[in-house]
Length: 250
Figure 1 (cartoon, rainbow, N blue to C red):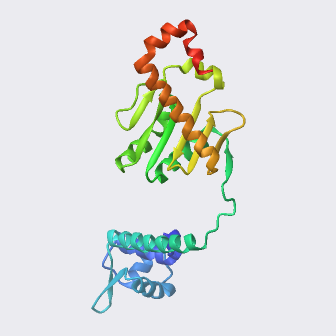
Figure 2: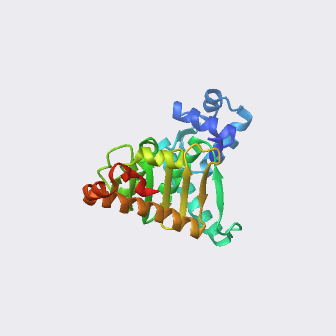
Figure 3: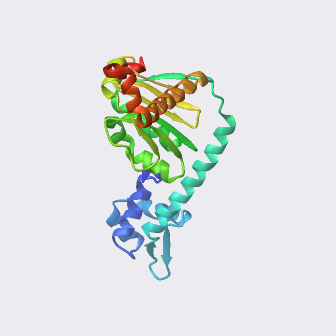
């Protein structure tokens, strides 16, 4: 309760009232652990916050406002404050980095950033994912799709999900050999990209750089084109390139 602006005495007094009511000020001091010399001052502060109801009589007795009403009020108060702060800081904020490029190291940090970018997306998500990473962010992808976000991309090592517009890669072994690890690309709203090779020592790049975002999206689109071509013309390609078919990518 201290995190929401309550003093120790105010918190103890309110909790004491919730546990047992109606009570006199003396009884509340005894039940709550608030010193008798401070109890009436504390009750007045709670009354100012509209959290205590006084019952007429001699002596006066006190009831608490229900915890449900307290929490609803706190939620509304803090939501309104946060909304006002958000608007104010958006007016003040100046991005000193401009188009930035940051390195993110550590698997969990990468997954956390991926989920964050998906939650913040507004209209489009373009992805290149392996099964291992897909399972870590599936929940947020489904939520984004439910918000009406357009989602499309390539999946390696698993069947395509039954939402969005996904394509199976089909040349996983060659991709691993080529990149020496699992490539991951997430492009949000043509504005931000998270890309790199999972668990590579250099880490993953998180960027708003226009050129890198554009290249990341084009990479995924290229892989989609290949998947479509192989789906419809795989037999012809196999006849033309034989057992070296997979090297067509190189």
